[in-house]
Structures are given as structure tokens and as C-alpha cells.
Image (cartoon, rainbow, N blue to C red):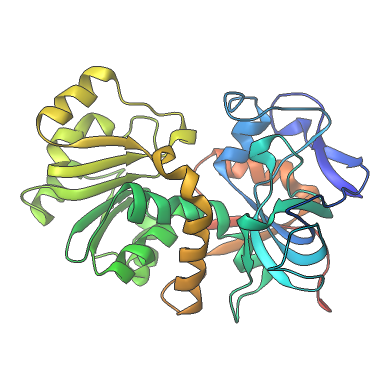
Length: 330
């Protein structure tokens, strides 16, 4: 099979075409003929070797967590899927297997779901990582409830675009940070307040909207852009959920100071063991029409390096999707 591979760590230029054996599905596995693959910040961090604490690399290595396509074969013990089923989900890149930037990809059956009715492969490929990160961070780690107030740091990206909708489906009120050019977009998804992080006092805007502080922050930006203000933004009894792969970690003294005010600073990884449940919950919201596709831009798989550079620059609205194969007749 053809795939975009890396043969060592480095910048986007290390991505190149390669020919690899087509994998075979083992017990509990599904072989997917890939139509589209999503591009996530975790992809370029994987490419640079920054996620070696989580991934057992081998070379040549195929990147890509997100996938959407058609089941080619199902291994022993797989009853939920059969050849020809249209699915979306996650590769096993996190376990050190090759990812979705390839014509074929293995997935654990528990990490696949049927393609939502009416969604294209490209739209569905935007869901798995961003969607389960949003769902797990808000519903599970964040324990957000109806009537509460949520701030999403980075509301226009993949996680934020889906997170706004998940929170609204729960009956929560949502504020986000984003650039001025994305304000109409996030409001269209259901954000009540959009704060221009480039030209505004985020803390002051949040406290005007939620005088006692918000119940939950989902930080989809990291890089300590908002974390130092946690004590000024989150209400007592509230939570601040960090996305661990953004390589942002609260210092012990800040965690202790927050705890003294009954504020929990958590990694989204506290809920990662329940990721298959998050995928199923997300698929249910999509099926009910409560989560609609985020903004997407498609690029050919051969332009994966250019896609990585754009995601690294952190100014992508929604998601960039790599088209792996022509699929007009699938």
C-alpha cells in the first residue's frame, strides 16, 4: 500500500511517500480502507518525537490518528462490523502501530463507530480525536452539567468547534477565546460569548460574563496561555481541564493553590480509559443532529507536510482533512 511515512524524527519535511505491506486484521481488529484522515496537533508532535512517553515508535512509521473509510476485513471476535461498512474512528498509532496516512489502516473495533447519517468521509474524519477530546474533557473529566458555564480556550479549532456543540447539548452556557475573524463562526455553533484573545482582557471579559467564575475551563490551546489565570477564572468547586498532549502542565504550587480554593486542575488523560465510551457518546450526538460537522478544509494526502505546517501555526478553523483516496463510488 502507499502511505506517507517518516523514517526519523524532524520537521514537516521528513514526511514522504513510501510503499509498505498492507496490514492484516488480527483478533479484535478491523482493517479499514481509508478515504480520509484528519490532521491533529498530536500528529506533528508525534512526528517530532515529542510523544515518546506515550508511543512506542518504529521506523518507517505512518502518522495519523483520525480515519474514515470502509471496512475491508474484520478479525476474529469482531461482530459489530463487516466488510463494506462505512466507519470512522481512530487508528492504533497510540499503541505504536501505523496510523491513517495510508491506503489501509488497522483499528481496534472498540475505537470505531458507524459513519453518522448524512456525513461525508471528510466530515467524519474530523471527529475522532478532536471530538472525543472535547466530549471526554467536558462530559467526563469536566463533569459539566445543565445550566453551568464553560469557557473553551481556543474555540474555533477542532476541539473547540465540537466542544461548543457538546456543551450546548448538555444545556450549558459557553464562552470561548478565539481570533476576531472567527467570532461569527463560534457564535454560529452556539457560543454565547466570544473573546478576542489578541485584543482583549480575557479574565475581565470572563468575570463580566460569569461574575463568580466559570464552572469549567477546557483548555484547547495549552502553552500556558490561560493557565496562570486559573484562580481568577474558575469558581470554587470548578475544574480546569488541560489537554495533556498540548504539552502544558500546571506547576505543583499552582495545583495546590487551586485545590485550596476547591478548584481542580486535571489532565484530560484521567478519562482516557473510557475513550470508546466517549466515541459512542459523540456518535450518538451526531446521529441526533446535536453535533454537526466543524469547518473542514481538504488537502491531498501528498500535501501532508503542508498540512502539518498549517496546524503547527495554530490558526486553522475547524480541521484540515487529508484525502487519501478517491471515493466517489464507495
